[in-house]
Length: 494
Picture (tube, rainbow, N blue to C red):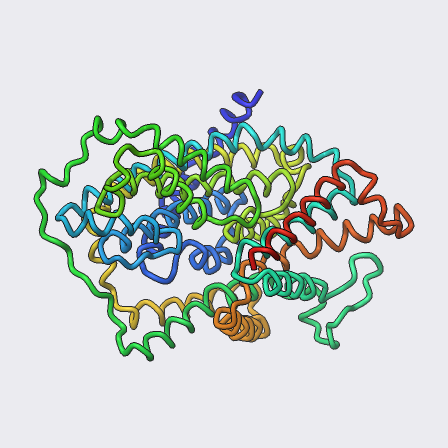
C-alpha cells in the first residue's frame, strides 16, 4: 500500500518544474547556511511568501529543499572558520575545524556532506513508514486529548528551548494570546482588532515570522558589528594536499555504526516537539565519543566526530514532520514554518491530512528523497567554491536580507500595514533575544494557538466545562501526567 502510494508520489515529484525548484531550494539553503548568523530558519521565513503562487507540491518541496540544504550548510563555516553558520553546527566545529587546520578542509566537508545526506535519508524513510500509523492512531483523539497534547507540547518546548522554563512558558502563551486577535471563529465577533480592518483576519503569520525570526536576527548582527567594529568574514581558503583530502568509500563506510546510531538519535529527537537540532547534534557527538575505542581523538580533527554530528542533526529534518503530519504539532521552528506554508495552500496539518491530501503528502515524501540526491550532487560540486562564500562581508549580506524581508511581506498582500507589523515584531524579537525569552516558544505558541483554542472550547462545550475529562480519558491523562512530570523536572533543573 505504502509502496503504491509512494510510486504515485514519485510520478508527481518528478515533474520538471518540481525538480527545478527542489534543486534551487537545496542550493539556496546551503548558501544561506554557509553565511554565519543566518541559517535555514531565516531562509524559510523569507522564502515562504514566494511560494504563494506555486502549486502546493512544488512549494513544499522547494521549502523542504531549503531546510535540508540550510541544516548542512552551517557545517562549512564551522569547518573552515570555526564560525558555525547554524547553532547545531557548533558540534561539527569541534572536529571539523581542527581537521581543516591540519590541511584537510575538503575531506572534512566531504565527511560532513555524506554523513548529512545519510542521516537525512534514514530520517525520511522513518517518516514515510511512521507518518500513516501515527495519523491513524491520532484519529482516536478527541478535543480533550488534543487539549492535553498541546499543553504538553507547550511545556516541553518551553523547558527545552530556553534557559528559563518561566520565560519559555510566558513566550509561548504570549504567542497564543496574539493568535486570538481577529474574528472569533464561533460567533465572528471582533477581538482586539481596535477597528483596524487589517486585523480582522488576525495577525499575519508572514509578518510575525519574518519579523521575529529573520529581521530581528539581522538587527542583532548589526549591533554586534557596530560593537566589534568588524563587518567582514575572516578566513581564507587553506592550501591543502589533494591526496590527503581524498575520502575513500572504505574509510567512510567503515564507521557505519556511528552513522546509523546518530541517524536514529536525530530521528528520535526530531519526533519529540521542542528538542531541537542542536540537541541532536551534541547527543550524536557524545554517543559516538562514548562508544569509541579511542575517545581521546575526538576534538583533534577526528572524522568520526564530524560524521556523528552531521548524521544526527540532518536526521531531525525528516523526523520532525512526523508529529507535524500526524498531529499538526511542529517538531521544531522549521516544521512550524512549514505548517504555515501548508495552511497558506489550504492544507491543514493533522490526523486527516494523509486521508484528505494523500497524493500531495506522498508527493512530498518522494520529493524529500529526491532532494537528498540533489543535496549530495550540489553539495559535492560546490565544495570547491563554498570557501569563497564564507568570505562575503556582512556589510553586503545584511542589507540584501533586509530588502528581501520587506519584499517578502509586502508582495503577497501589498499591505504596508503588514510591513509595519513586521518591523514591530522585529523589535520584539530583538528584545526577546537579549532578555532570554524564547523566540521558538513564541512562534510555536502563535501557530498552535488556534488549535488549542478550538480544542479547549470544544472540550468545554462537550463536557459542560468539566475538566475532569482530562483525567478520565486514558490518552489525555497520560499527557497531563507527562506535563506535570516535565514541569517538575524543568523546575528542578532551573
